[in-house]
Length: 284
Length: 249
Image (tube, rainbow over all chains, first blue to last red; front, side, top):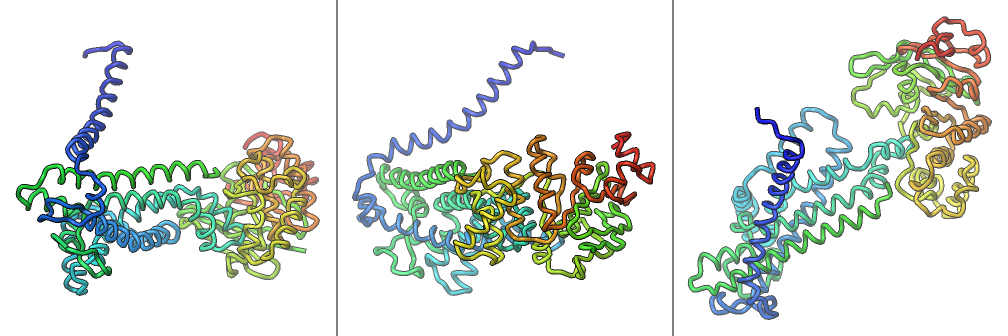
Protein backbone atom coordinates (compact mmCIF):
# COMPACT_ATOMS: atom_id res chain seq x y z
CA UNK A 1 0.00 0.00 0.00
CA UNK A 2 1.13 3.49 -0.75
CA UNK A 3 2.42 5.19 2.33
CA UNK A 4 2.47 8.97 2.41
CA UNK A 5 4.57 10.88 4.82
CA UNK A 6 2.49 12.67 7.46
CA UNK A 7 3.40 16.12 6.21
CA UNK A 8 2.26 15.40 2.68
CA UNK A 9 -0.97 13.65 3.73
CA UNK A 10 -1.72 16.60 5.99
CA UNK A 11 -1.28 18.96 3.05
CA UNK A 12 -3.45 16.86 0.76
CA UNK A 13 -6.32 16.48 3.20
CA UNK A 14 -6.16 20.19 4.05
CA UNK A 15 -6.39 21.09 0.35
CA UNK A 16 -9.30 18.71 -0.24
CA UNK A 17 -11.25 20.11 2.70
CA UNK A 18 -10.54 23.69 1.67
CA UNK A 19 -11.54 22.94 -1.92
CA UNK A 20 -14.87 21.46 -0.76
CA UNK A 21 -15.55 24.57 1.28
CA UNK A 22 -14.75 26.88 -1.63
CA UNK A 23 -17.05 24.84 -3.87
CA UNK A 24 -19.89 25.72 -1.52
CA UNK A 25 -19.22 29.45 -1.89
CA UNK A 26 -18.88 29.53 -5.67
CA UNK A 27 -22.52 28.94 -6.70
CA UNK A 28 -23.77 31.56 -4.26
CA UNK A 29 -21.32 34.16 -5.46
CA UNK A 30 -21.98 33.39 -9.13
CA UNK A 31 -25.75 33.61 -8.68
CA UNK A 32 -25.50 36.87 -6.81
CA UNK A 33 -23.02 38.25 -9.32
CA UNK A 34 -25.11 37.38 -12.39
CA UNK A 35 -28.31 38.68 -10.88
CA UNK A 36 -26.75 41.94 -9.78
CA UNK A 37 -24.93 42.42 -13.09
CA UNK A 38 -28.09 41.95 -15.15
CA UNK A 39 -30.65 43.34 -12.81
CA UNK A 40 -29.09 46.29 -10.99
CA UNK A 41 -29.97 48.66 -13.84
CA UNK A 42 -33.69 47.92 -13.35
CA UNK A 43 -33.73 48.93 -9.70
CA UNK A 44 -35.17 52.40 -9.46
CA UNK A 45 -37.52 54.03 -7.00
CA UNK A 46 -40.30 53.65 -9.54
CA UNK A 47 -39.57 49.94 -10.02
CA UNK A 48 -40.02 49.34 -6.27
CA UNK A 49 -43.08 51.53 -5.71
CA UNK A 50 -45.15 51.63 -8.91
CA UNK A 51 -47.75 49.35 -10.46
CA UNK A 52 -46.74 47.34 -13.52
CA UNK A 53 -47.70 48.69 -16.93
CA UNK A 54 -47.38 47.85 -20.63
CA UNK A 55 -48.24 44.18 -19.98
CA UNK A 56 -45.69 44.11 -17.14
CA UNK A 57 -42.91 45.14 -19.45
CA UNK A 58 -42.63 48.46 -17.66
CA UNK A 59 -43.57 50.18 -14.46
CA UNK A 60 -42.84 48.56 -11.12
CA UNK A 61 -43.41 45.46 -9.04
CA UNK A 62 -44.90 47.13 -5.98
CA UNK A 63 -48.04 44.92 -5.78
CA UNK A 64 -45.92 41.78 -5.95
CA UNK A 65 -43.73 42.98 -3.08
CA UNK A 66 -46.79 43.85 -0.99
CA UNK A 67 -48.43 40.53 -1.92
CA UNK A 68 -45.45 38.45 -0.88
CA UNK A 69 -45.04 40.39 2.37
CA UNK A 70 -48.70 39.99 3.32
CA UNK A 71 -48.85 36.25 2.49
CA UNK A 72 -45.63 35.55 4.37
CA UNK A 73 -46.52 37.60 7.44
CA UNK A 74 -49.97 35.98 7.68
CA UNK A 75 -48.38 32.55 7.29
CA UNK A 76 -45.85 33.11 10.06
CA UNK A 77 -48.51 34.61 12.34
CA UNK A 78 -50.44 31.34 12.02
CA UNK A 79 -47.60 28.85 12.08
CA UNK A 80 -45.37 30.33 14.79
CA UNK A 81 -47.78 30.06 17.77
CA UNK A 82 -49.03 26.63 16.71
CA UNK A 83 -45.53 25.35 16.07
CA UNK A 84 -44.15 26.66 19.35
CA UNK A 85 -47.06 25.22 21.35
CA UNK A 86 -46.59 21.84 19.67
CA UNK A 87 -42.87 21.96 20.34
CA UNK A 88 -43.47 22.75 24.02
CA UNK A 89 -45.89 19.87 24.29
CA UNK A 90 -43.54 17.41 22.58
CA UNK A 91 -40.47 18.54 24.42
CA UNK A 92 -41.75 19.28 27.90
CA UNK A 93 -44.87 17.24 28.46
CA UNK A 94 -45.15 14.28 26.07
CA UNK A 95 -44.24 10.89 27.43
CA UNK A 96 -42.44 8.52 25.12
CA UNK A 97 -45.39 6.43 23.94
CA UNK A 98 -46.90 5.27 20.69
CA UNK A 99 -48.92 8.46 20.13
CA UNK A 100 -45.86 10.66 20.61
CA UNK A 101 -43.86 8.52 18.25
CA UNK A 102 -46.58 8.72 15.61
CA UNK A 103 -46.71 12.51 15.98
CA UNK A 104 -42.95 12.79 15.61
CA UNK A 105 -43.01 10.54 12.57
CA UNK A 106 -45.79 12.63 11.05
CA UNK A 107 -43.77 15.80 11.55
CA UNK A 108 -40.71 14.32 9.88
CA UNK A 109 -42.84 13.16 6.95
CA UNK A 110 -44.59 16.49 6.68
CA UNK A 111 -41.18 18.07 6.18
CA UNK A 112 -40.48 15.70 3.31
CA UNK A 113 -43.59 16.44 1.26
CA UNK A 114 -42.78 18.28 -2.01
CA UNK A 115 -43.97 21.87 -2.02
CA UNK A 116 -46.16 21.43 -5.09
CA UNK A 117 -48.15 18.81 -3.17
CA UNK A 118 -48.79 21.42 -0.50
CA UNK A 119 -50.02 23.68 -3.26
CA UNK A 120 -52.52 21.08 -4.45
CA UNK A 121 -53.53 20.31 -0.88
CA UNK A 122 -54.13 24.01 -0.24
CA UNK A 123 -56.16 24.25 -3.43
CA UNK A 124 -58.31 21.32 -2.37
CA UNK A 125 -58.81 22.20 1.27
CA UNK A 126 -58.58 25.96 1.67
CA UNK A 127 -59.54 27.30 -1.75
CA UNK A 128 -62.30 24.85 -2.63
CA UNK A 129 -63.51 22.94 0.41
CA UNK A 130 -63.38 25.83 2.89
CA UNK A 131 -64.35 28.21 0.06
CA UNK A 132 -61.67 30.75 0.92
CA UNK A 133 -61.03 31.22 -2.77
CA UNK A 134 -57.66 32.06 -4.23
CA UNK A 135 -56.65 34.56 -1.57
CA UNK A 136 -53.97 35.78 0.79
CA UNK A 137 -55.48 33.72 3.58
CA UNK A 138 -55.57 30.47 1.58
CA UNK A 139 -51.98 30.94 0.47
CA UNK A 140 -50.86 31.84 3.98
CA UNK A 141 -52.55 28.77 5.47
CA UNK A 142 -50.95 26.54 2.85
CA UNK A 143 -47.51 27.99 3.56
CA UNK A 144 -48.05 27.76 7.30
CA UNK A 145 -48.76 24.03 7.08
CA UNK A 146 -45.70 23.60 4.93
CA UNK A 147 -43.56 25.48 7.43
CA UNK A 148 -45.00 23.87 10.56
CA UNK A 149 -42.52 20.98 10.76
CA UNK A 150 -39.58 23.36 10.39
CA UNK A 151 -40.89 25.64 13.12
CA UNK A 152 -41.58 22.69 15.42
CA UNK A 153 -38.15 21.21 14.84
CA UNK A 154 -36.24 24.45 15.38
CA UNK A 155 -38.34 25.35 18.42
CA UNK A 156 -37.69 21.91 19.91
CA UNK A 157 -34.00 22.42 19.31
CA UNK A 158 -34.15 25.74 21.08
CA UNK A 159 -36.07 24.27 24.04
CA UNK A 160 -33.61 21.41 24.24
CA UNK A 161 -30.69 23.80 24.40
CA UNK A 162 -31.94 25.11 27.75
CA UNK A 163 -30.12 22.95 30.31
CA UNK A 164 -32.31 20.36 32.01
CA UNK A 165 -30.86 21.38 35.36
CA UNK A 166 -32.66 24.75 35.14
CA UNK A 167 -35.97 22.91 35.02
CA UNK A 168 -34.96 20.73 37.95
CA UNK A 169 -33.86 23.70 40.01
CA UNK A 170 -37.15 25.46 39.34
CA UNK A 171 -39.34 22.42 40.00
CA UNK A 172 -37.46 21.61 43.19
CA UNK A 173 -38.63 24.94 44.58
CA UNK A 174 -42.26 23.93 44.29
CA UNK A 175 -42.81 25.95 41.12
CA UNK A 176 -45.26 24.28 38.75
CA UNK A 177 -44.33 22.80 35.43
CA UNK A 178 -46.06 25.46 33.37
CA UNK A 179 -44.55 28.27 35.44
CA UNK A 180 -41.14 26.70 34.93
CA UNK A 181 -41.68 26.63 31.17
CA UNK A 182 -43.11 30.13 31.13
CA UNK A 183 -40.48 31.83 33.29
CA UNK A 184 -37.30 29.80 32.84
CA UNK A 185 -37.43 27.66 29.71
CA UNK A 186 -39.18 29.94 27.21
CA UNK A 187 -37.22 33.14 27.90
CA UNK A 188 -34.00 31.23 27.36
CA UNK A 189 -35.27 29.41 24.28
CA UNK A 190 -36.71 32.53 22.67
CA UNK A 191 -33.60 33.54 20.68
CA UNK A 192 -33.44 30.14 19.03
CA UNK A 193 -37.17 30.12 18.34
CA UNK A 194 -36.99 33.57 16.76
CA UNK A 195 -34.02 32.65 14.61
CA UNK A 196 -35.94 29.64 13.34
CA UNK A 197 -38.96 31.81 12.62
CA UNK A 198 -36.99 34.37 10.66
CA UNK A 199 -35.24 31.72 8.59
CA UNK A 200 -38.65 30.21 7.88
CA UNK A 201 -39.92 33.56 6.71
CA UNK A 202 -36.95 33.84 4.40
CA UNK A 203 -37.56 30.37 3.05
CA UNK A 204 -41.28 30.69 2.38
CA UNK A 205 -40.85 34.13 0.79
CA UNK A 206 -39.29 32.39 -2.17
CA UNK A 207 -41.76 29.52 -2.50
CA UNK A 208 -43.72 29.45 -5.75
CA UNK A 209 -45.51 26.13 -5.95
CA UNK A 210 -47.63 26.36 -2.77
CA UNK A 211 -49.03 29.81 -3.63
CA UNK A 212 -49.41 29.24 -7.35
CA UNK A 213 -52.89 27.70 -7.00
CA UNK A 214 -53.87 29.25 -3.68
CA UNK A 215 -52.98 32.94 -3.55
CA UNK A 216 -51.05 34.32 -6.47
CA UNK A 217 -52.59 36.05 -9.47
CA UNK A 218 -51.17 36.68 -12.91
CA UNK A 219 -52.00 40.34 -12.68
CA UNK A 220 -54.09 42.38 -10.26
CA UNK A 221 -54.48 46.04 -11.14
CA UNK A 222 -54.90 47.17 -7.52
CA UNK A 223 -53.46 46.44 -4.10
CA UNK A 224 -55.23 43.86 -1.85
CA UNK A 225 -58.00 45.30 0.33
CA UNK A 226 -58.50 42.34 2.61
CA UNK A 227 -57.05 38.90 3.39
CA UNK A 228 -59.59 37.37 1.01
CA UNK A 229 -58.18 39.12 -2.04
CA UNK A 230 -55.98 37.61 -4.68
CA UNK A 231 -52.54 39.15 -4.86
CA UNK A 232 -49.47 39.19 -7.00
CA UNK A 233 -46.42 37.58 -5.42
CA UNK A 234 -42.75 38.00 -6.24
CA UNK A 235 -41.76 34.39 -6.94
CA UNK A 236 -44.84 33.74 -9.08
CA UNK A 237 -44.43 37.07 -10.83
CA UNK A 238 -40.86 36.15 -11.62
CA UNK A 239 -42.01 32.83 -13.05
CA UNK A 240 -44.58 34.58 -15.24
CA UNK A 241 -42.39 37.32 -16.61
CA UNK A 242 -39.58 34.93 -17.40
CA UNK A 243 -41.71 32.28 -19.17
CA UNK A 244 -45.10 33.63 -20.19
CA UNK A 245 -44.52 37.09 -21.58
CA UNK A 246 -42.68 37.54 -24.88
CA UNK A 247 -40.17 40.34 -25.38
CA UNK A 248 -39.70 40.89 -21.68
CA UNK A 249 -36.74 43.22 -21.04
CA UNK A 250 -34.02 41.09 -19.44
CA UNK A 251 -33.13 43.64 -16.81
CA UNK A 252 -36.67 43.61 -15.39
CA UNK A 253 -36.56 39.83 -14.96
CA UNK A 254 -33.21 40.00 -13.21
CA UNK A 255 -34.26 43.10 -11.31
CA UNK A 256 -37.26 41.22 -9.92
CA UNK A 257 -35.02 38.31 -8.98
CA UNK A 258 -32.66 40.75 -7.30
CA UNK A 259 -35.46 42.24 -5.20
CA UNK A 260 -36.61 38.77 -4.13
CA UNK A 261 -33.06 37.71 -3.35
CA UNK A 262 -32.40 40.85 -1.33
CA UNK A 263 -35.60 40.36 0.64
CA UNK A 264 -34.62 36.79 1.53
CA UNK A 265 -30.98 37.58 2.22
CA UNK A 266 -31.74 40.59 4.38
CA UNK A 267 -34.11 38.48 6.49
CA UNK A 268 -31.42 35.83 6.91
CA UNK A 269 -28.96 38.54 7.82
CA UNK A 270 -31.42 39.87 10.36
CA UNK A 271 -31.68 36.36 11.82
CA UNK A 272 -27.90 36.11 12.07
CA UNK A 273 -27.61 39.49 13.79
CA UNK A 274 -30.43 38.59 16.19
CA UNK A 275 -28.70 35.33 17.02
CA UNK A 276 -25.40 37.06 17.76
CA UNK A 277 -27.16 39.63 19.91
CA UNK A 278 -29.05 37.01 21.93
CA UNK A 279 -25.98 34.79 22.33
CA UNK A 280 -24.11 37.69 23.86
CA UNK A 281 -26.95 38.40 26.22
CA UNK A 282 -27.20 34.79 27.38
CA UNK A 283 -26.16 34.43 30.97
CA UNK A 284 -24.75 30.93 31.03
CA UNK B 1 -40.21 13.34 67.07
CA UNK B 2 -40.15 11.93 63.57
CA UNK B 3 -40.35 14.50 60.78
CA UNK B 4 -40.07 11.89 58.06
CA UNK B 5 -40.93 8.24 58.34
CA UNK B 6 -40.12 5.81 55.56
CA UNK B 7 -41.96 2.49 55.52
CA UNK B 8 -40.86 -0.41 53.36
CA UNK B 9 -39.69 1.73 50.46
CA UNK B 10 -38.56 -0.01 47.28
CA UNK B 11 -37.32 1.93 44.27
CA UNK B 12 -36.66 0.71 40.75
CA UNK B 13 -34.93 2.04 37.68
CA UNK B 14 -36.07 0.20 34.60
CA UNK B 15 -36.52 -3.27 36.05
CA UNK B 16 -33.65 -2.96 38.44
CA UNK B 17 -34.15 -2.53 42.16
CA UNK B 18 -31.96 0.26 43.51
CA UNK B 19 -33.47 0.54 47.00
CA UNK B 20 -34.64 -2.47 48.93
CA UNK B 21 -37.28 -2.48 51.69
CA UNK B 22 -36.01 0.64 53.33
CA UNK B 23 -37.27 1.63 56.77
CA UNK B 24 -35.78 4.79 58.15
CA UNK B 25 -36.85 7.88 60.03
CA UNK B 26 -35.63 11.46 60.17
CA UNK B 27 -36.01 13.25 63.50
CA UNK B 28 -37.15 16.86 63.60
CA UNK B 29 -34.30 19.41 63.61
CA UNK B 30 -31.58 16.86 63.19
CA UNK B 31 -28.99 16.47 60.48
CA UNK B 32 -29.20 12.93 59.21
CA UNK B 33 -26.23 12.16 57.01
CA UNK B 34 -26.27 9.32 54.55
CA UNK B 35 -23.00 7.78 53.49
CA UNK B 36 -22.16 4.90 51.22
CA UNK B 37 -20.21 4.09 48.07
CA UNK B 38 -21.39 4.90 44.56
CA UNK B 39 -24.59 3.12 43.46
CA UNK B 40 -25.69 2.48 47.02
CA UNK B 41 -29.04 4.25 46.47
CA UNK B 42 -28.33 7.35 48.57
CA UNK B 43 -29.27 9.87 45.92
CA UNK B 44 -32.25 7.83 44.76
CA UNK B 45 -33.49 7.88 48.34
CA UNK B 46 -33.00 11.61 48.63
CA UNK B 47 -34.69 12.37 45.33
CA UNK B 48 -37.61 10.18 46.38
CA UNK B 49 -38.20 12.38 49.42
CA UNK B 50 -39.20 15.39 47.30
CA UNK B 51 -40.35 13.22 44.38
CA UNK B 52 -37.84 14.65 41.92
CA UNK B 53 -37.44 11.08 40.68
CA UNK B 54 -41.06 11.04 39.58
CA UNK B 55 -39.99 13.12 36.57
CA UNK B 56 -38.03 10.13 35.30
CA UNK B 57 -40.19 7.76 33.25
CA UNK B 58 -37.92 4.78 34.09
CA UNK B 59 -38.41 5.18 37.80
CA UNK B 60 -41.00 3.40 39.89
CA UNK B 61 -41.50 2.80 43.60
CA UNK B 62 -43.46 0.94 46.24
CA UNK B 63 -43.96 1.68 49.91
CA UNK B 64 -44.77 4.88 51.74
CA UNK B 65 -43.03 7.96 53.05
CA UNK B 66 -44.72 10.15 55.65
CA UNK B 67 -43.96 13.81 56.16
CA UNK B 68 -45.49 14.49 59.56
CA UNK B 69 -48.80 12.68 59.05
CA UNK B 70 -49.08 12.96 55.26
CA UNK B 71 -48.07 10.31 52.79
CA UNK B 72 -45.96 12.24 50.31
CA UNK B 73 -46.97 10.01 47.42
CA UNK B 74 -50.56 11.18 47.82
CA UNK B 75 -49.58 14.81 48.03
CA UNK B 76 -49.59 17.42 45.30
CA UNK B 77 -45.99 17.52 44.06
CA UNK B 78 -45.69 21.29 44.13
CA UNK B 79 -46.93 21.45 47.70
CA UNK B 80 -44.54 18.70 48.74
CA UNK B 81 -41.54 20.45 47.20
CA UNK B 82 -42.49 23.65 48.93
CA UNK B 83 -42.15 21.81 52.22
CA UNK B 84 -39.12 19.75 51.23
CA UNK B 85 -36.43 21.82 49.54
CA UNK B 86 -33.42 20.37 47.75
CA UNK B 87 -29.86 21.48 47.16
CA UNK B 88 -28.17 19.76 44.24
CA UNK B 89 -24.61 18.51 43.92
CA UNK B 90 -23.63 21.18 41.45
CA UNK B 91 -24.87 24.69 42.20
CA UNK B 92 -27.59 25.58 39.68
CA UNK B 93 -28.28 29.30 39.74
CA UNK B 94 -31.04 30.24 37.33
CA UNK B 95 -29.85 32.47 34.45
CA UNK B 96 -31.03 35.71 36.04
CA UNK B 97 -29.80 38.21 38.61
CA UNK B 98 -29.03 37.34 42.23
CA UNK B 99 -32.15 39.19 43.35
CA UNK B 100 -34.37 37.46 40.81
CA UNK B 101 -32.98 34.06 41.77
CA UNK B 102 -34.16 34.53 45.35
CA UNK B 103 -37.58 35.99 44.58
CA UNK B 104 -38.20 33.62 41.67
CA UNK B 105 -40.04 30.95 43.66
CA UNK B 106 -41.74 33.25 46.22
CA UNK B 107 -43.21 35.25 43.31
CA UNK B 108 -44.50 32.15 41.52
CA UNK B 109 -45.88 30.68 44.73
CA UNK B 110 -47.53 33.94 45.72
CA UNK B 111 -45.56 34.28 48.95
CA UNK B 112 -44.15 37.72 48.20
CA UNK B 113 -46.09 39.86 45.76
CA UNK B 114 -45.22 43.37 46.89
CA UNK B 115 -41.80 44.81 46.12
CA UNK B 116 -41.19 45.62 49.79
CA UNK B 117 -41.97 42.01 50.77
CA UNK B 118 -39.62 40.77 48.08
CA UNK B 119 -36.82 43.02 49.30
CA UNK B 120 -37.31 41.67 52.80
CA UNK B 121 -37.30 38.04 51.61
CA UNK B 122 -34.09 38.57 49.65
CA UNK B 123 -32.27 40.22 52.52
CA UNK B 124 -33.37 37.64 55.10
CA UNK B 125 -32.61 34.62 52.90
CA UNK B 126 -29.18 35.91 51.92
CA UNK B 127 -28.36 36.71 55.55
CA UNK B 128 -29.44 33.24 56.67
CA UNK B 129 -27.27 31.70 54.00
CA UNK B 130 -24.41 34.00 55.09
CA UNK B 131 -24.06 35.50 51.65
CA UNK B 132 -25.58 38.95 52.27
CA UNK B 133 -22.34 40.80 53.04
CA UNK B 134 -20.66 39.52 49.91
CA UNK B 135 -23.43 40.38 47.45
CA UNK B 136 -25.55 43.15 48.95
CA UNK B 137 -24.04 45.76 46.62
CA UNK B 138 -24.53 43.75 43.43
CA UNK B 139 -27.93 42.13 43.76
CA UNK B 140 -28.65 43.14 40.18
CA UNK B 141 -25.69 41.35 38.64
CA UNK B 142 -25.97 37.89 37.15
CA UNK B 143 -25.93 34.97 39.56
CA UNK B 144 -23.81 33.13 37.00
CA UNK B 145 -20.90 35.45 37.82
CA UNK B 146 -20.62 34.31 41.45
CA UNK B 147 -17.97 31.81 42.48
CA UNK B 148 -18.94 28.15 42.93
CA UNK B 149 -19.17 28.41 46.71
CA UNK B 150 -21.20 31.61 46.50
CA UNK B 151 -23.51 30.02 43.96
CA UNK B 152 -24.12 27.10 46.28
CA UNK B 153 -24.96 29.46 49.13
CA UNK B 154 -27.22 31.40 46.78
CA UNK B 155 -29.03 28.14 46.09
CA UNK B 156 -29.40 27.63 49.84
CA UNK B 157 -30.81 31.15 50.13
CA UNK B 158 -33.23 30.38 47.32
CA UNK B 159 -34.54 27.41 49.27
CA UNK B 160 -34.79 29.41 52.51
CA UNK B 161 -36.86 32.02 50.69
CA UNK B 162 -39.73 29.54 50.36
CA UNK B 163 -39.34 28.57 54.00
CA UNK B 164 -39.55 24.77 53.76
CA UNK B 165 -39.63 22.33 56.68
CA UNK B 166 -37.02 19.89 55.42
CA UNK B 167 -33.93 20.58 53.33
CA UNK B 168 -32.25 17.81 51.34
CA UNK B 169 -28.57 18.22 50.53
CA UNK B 170 -27.29 16.06 47.70
CA UNK B 171 -23.49 16.00 48.02
CA UNK B 172 -23.56 19.80 48.21
CA UNK B 173 -19.81 20.25 48.43
CA UNK B 174 -18.59 17.81 45.81
CA UNK B 175 -17.58 20.66 43.52
CA UNK B 176 -16.34 23.07 46.17
CA UNK B 177 -12.96 23.94 47.65
CA UNK B 178 -12.34 23.26 51.38
CA UNK B 179 -13.10 26.82 52.50
CA UNK B 180 -16.40 26.97 50.63
CA UNK B 181 -17.20 23.51 51.98
CA UNK B 182 -16.59 24.71 55.52
CA UNK B 183 -18.95 27.64 54.92
CA UNK B 184 -21.68 25.38 53.60
CA UNK B 185 -21.23 23.05 56.59
CA UNK B 186 -21.39 25.99 58.99
CA UNK B 187 -24.64 27.14 57.49
CA UNK B 188 -26.05 23.61 57.70
CA UNK B 189 -25.39 23.49 61.43
CA UNK B 190 -26.98 26.91 61.77
CA UNK B 191 -29.97 25.82 59.69
CA UNK B 192 -30.88 22.77 61.74
CA UNK B 193 -32.25 25.05 64.46
CA UNK B 194 -35.13 25.80 62.14
CA UNK B 195 -35.11 23.01 59.59
CA UNK B 196 -34.75 19.26 59.41
CA UNK B 197 -31.84 18.27 57.23
CA UNK B 198 -30.95 15.14 55.28
CA UNK B 199 -27.44 15.20 53.86
CA UNK B 200 -26.12 12.73 51.32
CA UNK B 201 -22.36 12.88 51.14
CA UNK B 202 -19.44 11.03 49.59
CA UNK B 203 -17.21 12.52 52.18
CA UNK B 204 -17.14 10.38 55.33
CA UNK B 205 -15.35 13.10 57.28
CA UNK B 206 -18.09 15.55 56.40
CA UNK B 207 -20.64 13.13 57.85
CA UNK B 208 -18.66 12.92 61.08
CA UNK B 209 -18.38 16.71 61.28
CA UNK B 210 -22.00 17.71 60.79
CA UNK B 211 -24.21 14.64 61.26
CA UNK B 212 -26.31 14.06 64.35
CA UNK B 213 -27.09 10.60 63.12
CA UNK B 214 -25.51 8.76 60.24
CA UNK B 215 -26.93 6.04 58.02
CA UNK B 216 -24.78 3.73 55.95
CA UNK B 217 -26.20 2.50 52.63
CA UNK B 218 -24.71 -0.31 50.58
CA UNK B 219 -26.08 -1.79 47.34
CA UNK B 220 -29.53 -0.34 47.92
CA UNK B 221 -29.82 -1.50 51.50
CA UNK B 222 -29.62 0.33 54.79
CA UNK B 223 -26.82 -1.45 56.63
CA UNK B 224 -26.68 0.60 59.80
CA UNK B 225 -28.03 3.79 61.33
CA UNK B 226 -26.86 5.26 64.60
CA UNK B 227 -25.74 8.40 66.41
CA UNK B 228 -22.80 9.75 64.42
CA UNK B 229 -20.50 9.62 67.45
CA UNK B 230 -21.35 5.99 68.17
CA UNK B 231 -21.15 4.89 64.58
CA UNK B 232 -17.73 6.36 63.95
CA UNK B 233 -16.28 5.00 67.19
CA UNK B 234 -17.85 1.55 67.32
CA UNK B 235 -19.81 0.52 64.26
CA UNK B 236 -21.88 -2.60 64.74
CA UNK B 237 -21.49 -3.97 61.24
CA UNK B 238 -18.24 -5.08 59.70
CA UNK B 239 -19.18 -3.46 56.34
CA UNK B 240 -19.73 -0.09 58.01
CA UNK B 241 -16.37 -0.27 59.71
CA UNK B 242 -14.65 -1.17 56.45
CA UNK B 243 -16.27 1.75 54.66
CA UNK B 244 -15.61 4.36 57.35
CA UNK B 245 -12.02 3.37 57.74
CA UNK B 246 -11.58 3.58 53.99
CA UNK B 247 -11.02 -0.07 53.21
CA UNK B 248 -13.42 0.19 50.25
CA UNK B 249 -15.65 2.66 48.50
